Length: 195
Image (cartoon, rainbow, N blue to C red; front, side, top):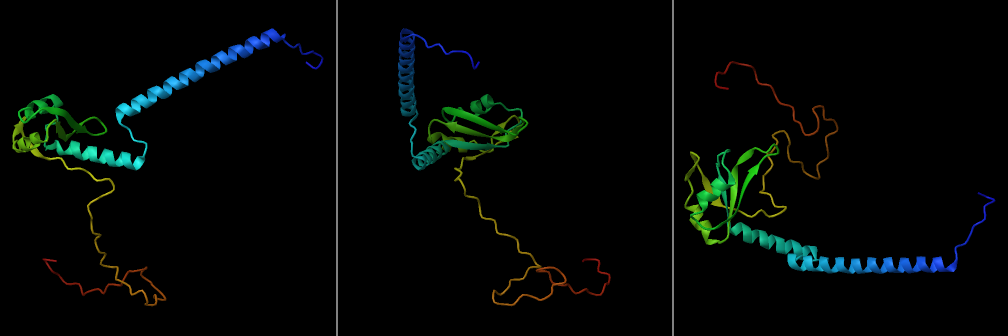
């Protein structure tokens, strides 16, 4: 290795290599431009918005619009197929989509969502409440729109052992029963059949 001389290629071959590289670079730039055009075309067709806040607002508005054309169907038989549910609600209007929810094992959960093409079909579908499908009485209601991050308020149950503390009250010096616990006085044990 140390004793080998490096032989330089003649200038014609280096010029050919440079021309080949320029040609490949030109092809890659053309391909990148074509990809950019295709991406812009797809984004234009999909109506995607670059601003995430605007995209979230449009998706929420779109979701509300779809939910206004949808109904919730409860107590659906486990052996029921989407085609049978679609057939049942076909008299109300044109059914766009039927979704039967299933658990992680693929077993149906017993309820479905039906989306119509027209919002007026929802009112007609609500008339089919308590109708029968596969021998089961269906529960039909209008689908509600979930608002992300909003949960119904559940008040915390109060702990009978915790007493409200005055913020200016000095803490106990010694708490033999644990913090917040109050010793209970024992009543004399006597027989009480109702207690």
